[in-house]
Length: 117
Image (cartoon, rainbow, N blue to C red; front, side, top):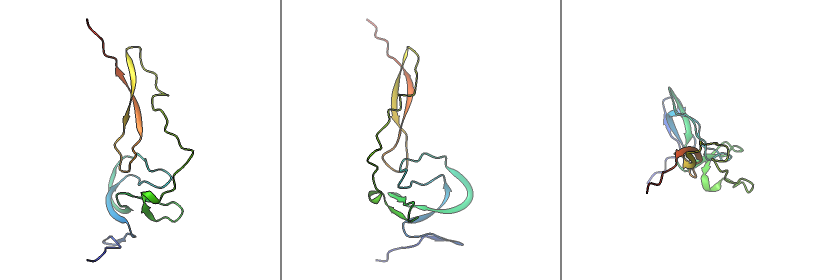
C-alpha cells in the first residue's frame, strides 16, 4: 500500500493533508472551525485542507481538527438574543450546514401555533 503525500494537478502541488479544489470559499482554521463562506468557482485551482483537517495559522499546515487547541473562554452564544420577533412569532435556533463540526446556529422568527378549542 502506498501513501499519497501530495496532491497535484498541472502546475499546482499541494502539501500533506491538502487537496486541489476548483471551487472554494474559505477553509476552516484552528481559530475558526465554523467558518461559513460563499462557494466561489472562478476556474482557479487552489490547495485546501482535506475533510476533518484545519489550517494551523502558526505553522500554515493542515492538522487534524483534534490537534487544534480549544479556547477555554469561548461560550456558545444564543443566536436569538439579538433578534426581535413580532408578537405572533418566536425565535428558533437552527444549525447552519457547514464543512467542519460543530456547526454554528442562527436565529429565525417563526409563527406561534394558535390553539383552537
